Image (cartoon, rainbow, N blue to C red; front, top):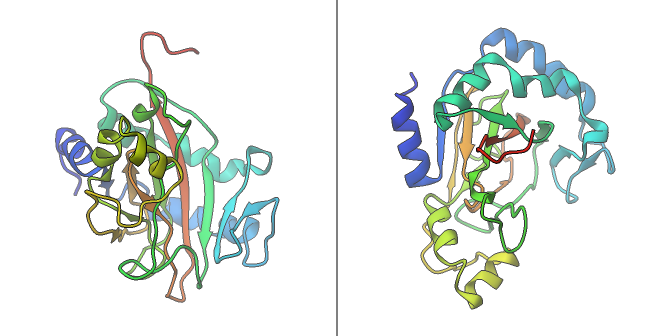
Length: 232
C-alpha cells in the first residue's frame, strides 16, 4: 500500500527517490507487454534505439515514439501519483521512452564494476533543473540482479552541495563518480509490474547487468511543476 503523499515527498527529498506501488493494474500490463515485444527486440539497432553495444535497448528519439506506450505517461493513475508527489500542477515535458534490458551486460554489476551518472539537462545546471521529476514505470517485476535501476541513495544532496566546488563539479560534469567523496554504496532497486519509481534529476544512477532470463521492460517519464512564470 502506498503511503501518504507527505511521506513519499519526505522520502524523495531525503533519499532522492520514492516508489509508488501498484499504480497500473494487470490489464494495463497485459496490454502493454506485447507492444514492447513488437517494437524492441535484442536485434533492434540504432538509430531506432540507443544500446551502447549492450543488452539495454532504449527508444532513441521522438521520431520513433510509440503512442500506444507513450499514452501511459498521461494515464490517470500515473498522473495521480505524480500529483501526490509534487502537490501542484505539472506538465509532461517529453514523450515517455520505452526501454528493454535483455539478459546480458548493460551497465555493470552493483558492488563490483557498476558506475553511475547524472542526467544533466545542462552543464552547469540551470536554476530550475532540479525541479524535474523523472519516473520509471515498471511493466515487469524486477528481481535481484535482473537489470534493475541502480542508484546511490542521497547522492542528489552530494551533487547539489558540490556544484560550487570547481574541482569536484568538473568530475561530476564528466560523469566521474567512482570513489567520489560523500557517496554511499549503490543499490539495485527491486519493483513489481505496475510500480513507479520517481527519482531526483541530480541522483547518481544507472543501468545494471541483467543476469536473469527475464527481459526488464520499463517506460521513462519526465514531468515538471508549473511555476508562475512557466511557459505554456
